[in-house]
Amino acid sequence: MPRVRKRPAGAARPDKKGPKGKRTKTDNQGEASAKVENSSLQETSASKDCGKNLSSYWLMKSEPESRLEKGIDVKFSIEDLKAQPKQTACWDGVRNYQARNFLRAMKLEEEAFFYHSNCREPGIAGLMKIVKEAYPDHTQFEKNSPHYDPSSKEDNPKWSMVDVQFVRMMKRFIPLAELKTYHQAHRATGGPLKNMALFTRQRLSVQPLTQGKNGPCLLITCQSDREFTCTSW
Image (tube, rainbow, N blue to C red; front, side, top):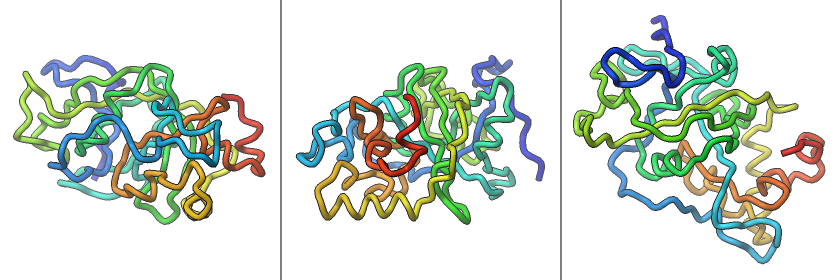
């Protein structure tokens, strides 16, 4: 089935429900509301440079391969983002309270890794940035949307989204298997990635990354990789 045509991110709609945007895989709905904090942000003795309690870097998941929900294809890859007008789209469809709170915590110009999930080869595909802070997710009110929530009210919406803009592709795709090796090594040594939410909260589609003075600790960890050491943040 053809995908629904997107409107430019942030554009007004006649029914004032907001723009069309990406359609993410729905998170578990109904979890207890959580504060904007995560175990991956705890400071460790293994690195003085990593572990600040607030993060300006994020990891956000989306499905790059076609999958139908209620007859609508929820596919949205980094290539799809790059093809959007102004390479910008709204990040809709998040239905997990903690992930929603992370969206609400995002600030303009903060950067996020675009992570391909639920596909043949999951991993980090590229980089994007936040170009509009959290506002109501219109899909919660659309009855034909896979992300419709009848319990949400327009005068008190439950769910939020942000607008993101493509920055660049990674110089090489960073597969999940490689990320897992860093996580496992840090579990053994007490390193800053030992509680990385990608592995401790696998179903969470929006995650903070521990930040050090030189960038995300994920990058600092991969010292032997030119992709990470030669990138200016």
